[in-house]
Image (cartoon, rainbow, N blue to C red; front, side):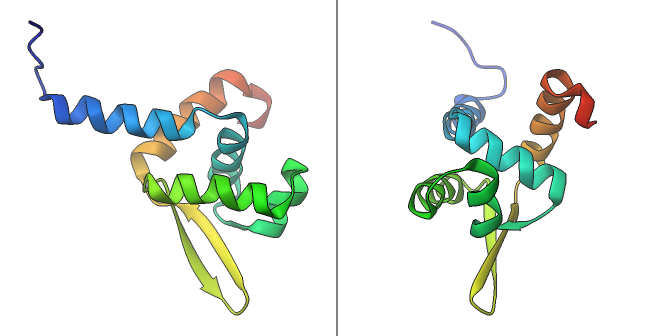
Length: 102
């Protein structure tokens, strides 16, 4: 039997975060939010070249994992990263895989 030094809850939480990020479109959304700070669905739709319904599905998964949060301004919802740990993880990933953007 393996003994968890920090408790299994930490690994379970990390696994859930990584599962939510483990999709190319969601990685792109989170990368964009890390770089821009916030964005609405229309901006992401244009960037991802996806239908609004698809972008919204990915946003729902990220919200359910508490990775992003939405802020309503009029008819728009602006999304941003809500978990600073995820921002740090993504900044490391961005610097490794997209060095030209750092």
